Amino acid sequence: MARPQVRDDIAMMSGYHSPQLDVSIRLNTNEAPEPPPDEFRERVAAAVHDVAWHRYPSRDAAGLRARIAEVEGVDPSQVFAANGSNEVLQTVMLAYGGAGRTALTFEPTYALHGHISRLVGTRVVEGERDDDFALDPAEVERLITTERPSVTFLCSPNNPTGVIESEATVRTVLDLVHAVDGLLVVDEAYGQFAPWSALELVDDTNSLVVTRTYSKTWSMAAARLGYGVAPTWVVDELDKVVLPYHLDAAKQIAGTIALDYLDEMRARVSALVEERGRVAAALDELDVDHWPSGANFILFRPRSRSGAEVWRALVDRSILVRNCASWPRLDDCLRLTLGTREENDEFVSALRSALEAS
Image: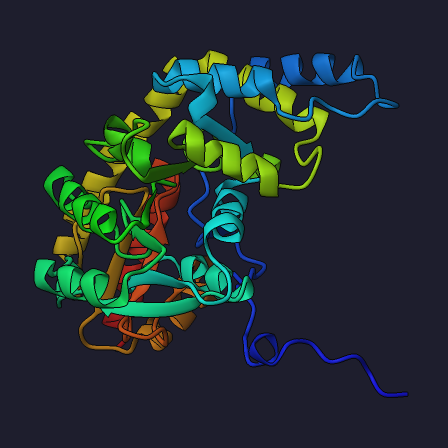
């Protein structure tokens, strides 16, 4: 029997994957190294016990949106919550992308920006960054002016490079996007690790969406919860597109309770920022190049051995980092997710051994 055929463009794609291996220290997926407080877990368990499982959850997740809005200092009508920030991105592209429309990315950047755009039938234009992974203002202006994208993506801090886009850069890109009646999406999955946020620019006069996640700073990767902050008129359109009851009751409960632990979240962020500086200083003493990061990870490149060889040597020492060595524009690069102090020390020691083995 002949099998049904997927769309031609889907058949040509490869999926987005982050392979896992059986190792002692896993530093490859940008997760938080430590769990949320025990009290949080106890409160969630107690609240979930009382869920009316025979009833649908709140369709608009109004309580969760209101708490997110309170923490971020915006109006609840400007908040859209979803199953991870990836679903926010997907919903944006379902509403503002599609056939006959263009999305603009600046590479290297988060692969799902282009992947999701293509999945919904949007043409993707890839702009280039300079050798230090910074945006070239002339390149940005040229592409927005000539391609007139419906959606332009920035990622700050950028994944996988860790580069932070300055406020001046985001304002400039936003002005260019306004001139072509487009939408600017700033992906801030790592935003709490950076010194400034594009959330400061969100209002109902700007065509700006800022996405964030619970996975990193809130230590809730298992929950798959994220949100976008955007003009009310954008959120209204996203609500039309997303599937009914897309956020289950347990997820809404967990996301709401988590926000009661803002001080604990900020302490975890502060500790990881300190570790970032300490590990970066250690890398300065090794035979690698690395880039300044505003996130909870560091991109680095061995000088005397191939990235693939060093990645394998680290795995042999039971440490897993992200292998970016074969990715376009990232020849021989590896990406370290910052772990606990002990895990980071083990990584530095293993990396030193791997480099000396050459």
